[in-house]
Length: 110
Length: 121
Image 1 (cartoon, one colour):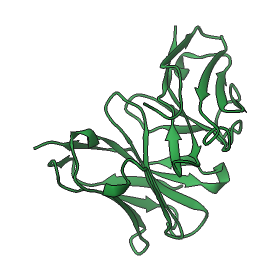
Image 2 (tube, each protein chain N blue to C red):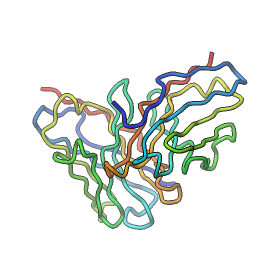
Image 3 (tube, rainbow over the protein chains, first blue to last red):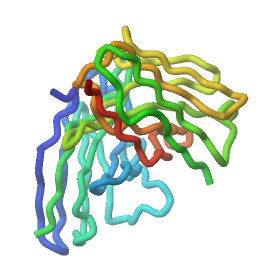
């Protein structure tokens, strides 16, 4: 059971906007910034969003992040077939004194 | 360009110690504001944070693994290592070594390719 809660799956058609939620608590999302990672099968994850809503260089602006209270969201606009991947949220947990991940969301582009 | 490469045995017997090393190239492991971390992923499952060591040598461990875990740095070889004792089948996973950078508010910006470890007799 992951400390952060994500829906196991999400889907959308090309061009659509999809959002993936990440729910936590006051000791993690409520008091720390959230990062998002994208992972394709058989490969290492890639940092997609850091500090709630910042994109590393090279990440398309179709990807955006937000945080409110103890929840965070990843939005993907103009969905493309190559966005089909697993997405993970992560943050620091002050109570555990360690990083925690969400269980991951498998995004399917229909 | 910073690169990380995991190395170590792919098969470990139950109750033994799993030892992995991550070689860092393209940067000095002892400089800058970074945490050098280990993440693992059982087949078909999600990511689990194992622990990290800072450039100053301070460590943070996953509480569920802390009693069995040691993460250390060898600055002379530009490597950091993971030792996990008393392993069981539940420790079977792909293990990634990762850099977390202050630039990205300690987001994990550089990942190794991962190494598969199986715990079996």
